[in-house]
Structures are given as structure tokens and as C-alpha cells.
Length: 211
Image 1 (tube, rainbow, N blue to C red):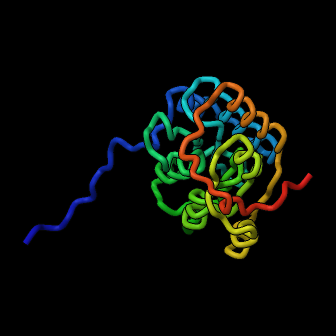
Image 2: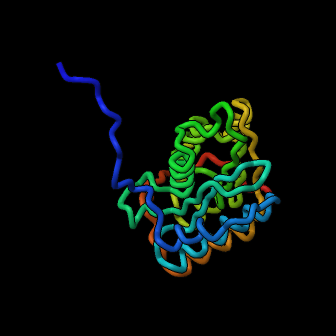
Image 3: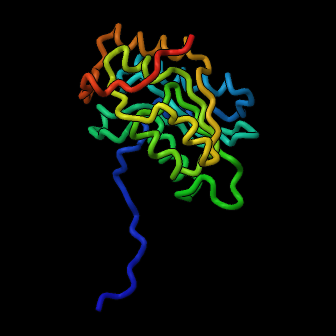
């Protein structure tokens, strides 16, 4: 029989950040106390990702909810990583778990963690949030804003925010929404790639955007 298995070290992760983003993490030493400051931080990540041509117009970050200490960031690197999983939220969550050496950001003894994202989560990222351990989700742009420039956000329940809240994850929407939408529009203006556009006429299940 084979002996006891050893814990393998995983290398070559597709969730590795671009060099400029790694530098941003190292430079952001001061806590971001207010919700708007945290959102504007991830919106800047999204815009820099567009300007540098390193991925899609989306940014995200995980913070300690009370102190505002930055744990990790994520930007959309689907096209440069050749990995459809590499949405900003997924990258931020994966890097937070790596940083804290725990697959559960809500593990006993941990402070509450907050995921801040420049756009509401798509169907994939929405599904990942309950298992990540974050207790708060803060969103900028709406899914319909991303769909307006051609992205496919996937099938998601209309009452998705309520479903998360039932699981003890609070949700804040429309934080700095106009600023977040401006990044999407800039991406479209620059001719950014709209990848995996597989919408059908029946795919759009979202409500009309609120003013």
C-alpha cells in the first residue's frame, strides 16, 4: 500500500495578479474605513486594468469589514490567464484565502470579511460567495450595466441579494454606481473584448434598473 499522502503544493495558479496589481496591494497600507472609499479603490483597479490592457473592466477586493484593512484584490484576468474562472471576485476571494491560509474567510477566530466589487456578481461569482466565508457584499454597477455593453452575466435569481441575506451575508448595492458604469463604458469605447457572449432572448432575467 502507498504511505500517507503528503499535502501537495499547488503552483501555476491562474489567479496570479498582473505585476501592477501586485504592486498596488503592497502599496495600500492604510485602512479604507468608509464603504465609498473601498468602492472607489476597486473602481480604480477596474479602470487601471482597462488602461493597461490586462483584462476586463471589473475590480474587486476583500477587506476586514470593521477596520478596513485590505486583505486581497482581484481584477478580471480572463483573457490573459486563458481561464474563464478569473473574474475579479473569484481572483480576490482566491487570493484572500491564500493570504490567510484558510479556505473559509468566516472561520472561527477570523474578523468579518467584506467583498467589494465594482459590479454585481455574475452567476458564477454569485455561486462562489456563500462558500467563500465573506459576510458582507458591496456592489457598484448592476448586472444590467455590464449586459448593456455586451457581457453575459448568466442566469441568476431575481431575488439573489435576498437569498444571500437569508444565509447571513448582507448586501449593499449601487455604491458609486455611476463611477463604476463609467469604467464599463470606457472599456466599450476602447473596443475591449466581450468574451463568452452566449445570451439568448430568454437569458435576461433582471429587473429594470432602478434610478
